Picture (cartoon, rainbow, N blue to C red):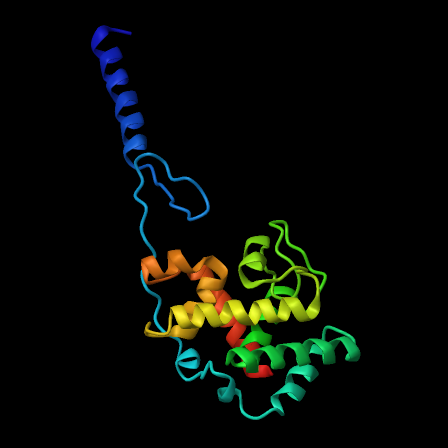
Length: 210
């Protein structure tokens, strides 16, 4: 092989490797640390859902006390009749105290634990509303696995979120997103992730079934 032929082959190899490096694709994930030359993009505000815009989050927005019966009936899909009665009674009683739509709370709990008062996540979240230990402390819950205490804590935390986001375009959706992703980040970004949108949609779907 002469020198000119070797030079052509070398140039060909270098060109191939250069083109491979120039076409490299990068993926940014919210759950992983991005590579040094990637750009983190803050989630844009998600369009409001027609369901959430028409949903009255106040207690009176759920109708009269007959809503307790529909909540109890829905819970019996997952728990015994006696336990369903206890859970629905706690939800409605504390929802009335804090002026929160009990169907919204019930739908949230359905998504979080399927009404299992003994549910526990890998992160340590407990009970019906899957309250973290830090949240339990904030809302005054001593036993996260106690049905009445957890129901009260979940309602009280939702009331805090609904008050926090009441000036937003869609306070219900933003409050639910804040429950999942943390209220400070959602408020700071004035938006939430597509994962949170799926979570919101799940809760609205249950709400419409109760």
